[in-house]
Image (tube, rainbow, N blue to C red; front, side, top):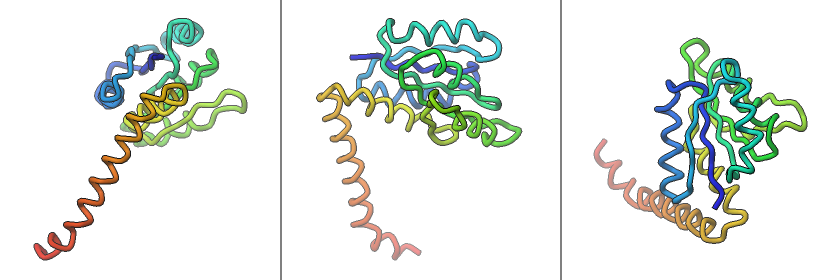
Length: 165
């Protein structure tokens, strides 16, 4: 199975990006976690992306805040799918990162999830890998079924809970 790269612009992003790790571990998807900055280590970030396919990666998840150029730098240097996770910052609550991540030029796409949405980035990475992996596809389908059953169980008990109010 191909690996997923989780790349973040700073180690201060780890608390958010660790949520993606938990999802990948739940699906038993191999991964690596790295810190590269689009601005402070641009050559290392570009080299990582250029070599990612040869190093066994199938998808790259990139988390960055503020100017959030990391996902774009990685996407510009690979043909692998890149999923951007805009991270919340103190200044503009992550809106700056969201816009920077989603507004890529034609031909260099970055799939973008919600601000601090690393869990959904990992789910999307799993779905991308599942295109060529039937066992993983079945795990995802089972997970979706469990999510559905959990909602229906809550629906069945909501009338009873309403009496508490």
